[in-house]
Length: 74
Length: 396
Picture 1 (cartoon, one colour):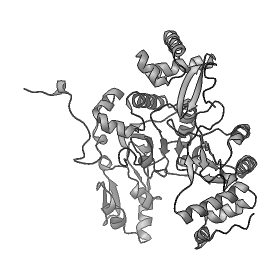
Picture 2 (spheres, chains in turn purple, brown):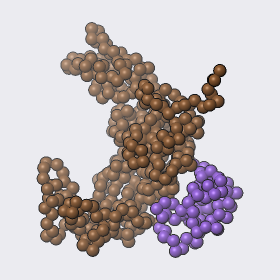
Picture 3 (cartoon, one colour):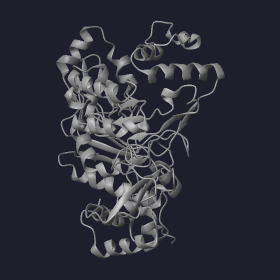
Picture 4 (cartoon, chains in turn red, orange):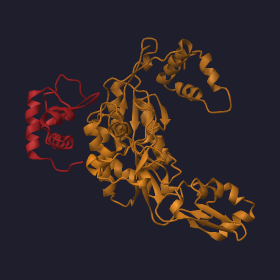
């Protein structure tokens, strides 16, 4: 577990999520070529800041807050 | 209750043992879901096939795990079980409840579900069987108000579980209950937001008797042990002899590493601590005379699992001895490093043991920063998956 997220990684994750409707953190990490644990930490903080939200569709996806409308979520 | 006939299920009520059919019939007097469950089950026995559909996207707000979707393929015939979802509730460490707590849970479940429970599922959770999608959130809200949280499901950390430990057992070498609680609290996110390649189980046993079968079932196994020598009470040994116990036959000859010696002439039992593998056999047979040593901690093992991709695997040792004291930072750090490595390299539905088997133990040990030790070899001549790195080979 990584405690504090890197602000640069948070920005990169937000940029990436602007381009796709939803993504798994594993895929974000692979695309950005960043260690997944660091991406997880960034997403966790972004979720706490209400900028992204989790979607559970078989597994866990993330999306920009509000852009997941219409997608199945819990 | 309807006058439904269930001749095939009735066969399962015969005999001296408890019957789940009897219990479902009892629940069926109050619950239409339980009543229809009997009907569908009888039909399954008649047709020799199951009628459950597994999966679907069901859950409660903010959680990706803890609810397992179940639907009936015979929803028109048995409308009360058309939706029959399972709710997993995180059990207290060691499964200690007061009867008031159990009544509270049952009241909540009779209000929102079928009233049928399974205490406990193989992962250890309290399993509540059978409710509709619309009732999941109110049920969770009531459980939450009563102080309960959901357990794990899907590709994430499953609810950690442990034996009763020092609460009831003199053999416990570690505080299994505290360790389990601490791990559960520290890794909550990974229970509720499943995002790993597959399930990951952590189980904690207080001694080598391994009452929660951690070695066979857990990806990360913690087993209490001791580093010094078994303590021997000579007077108590004599009492066993006086009561007619054949110590040579019952204890010494059954020691797997011949670490014990029995001097029948002088009535003296001695131990070669270096040869002892902490299997617990002698202590189990002579609990009044033999006790674990005083320098206690845990062995950490990884890779246990039931068969799916590869065959069944037993966990194997990666840390022979670790002191386990609050706040367990070394332990949490190791769990974090291992799960990150598995998450990084694992394929979908590949458990940790299978990943180590595929990539090789030496990659795992190198990436974890662990030195290979003899304890990692399961038995003499067992392949420890260890090969020298090319740069370490002296070709001269």
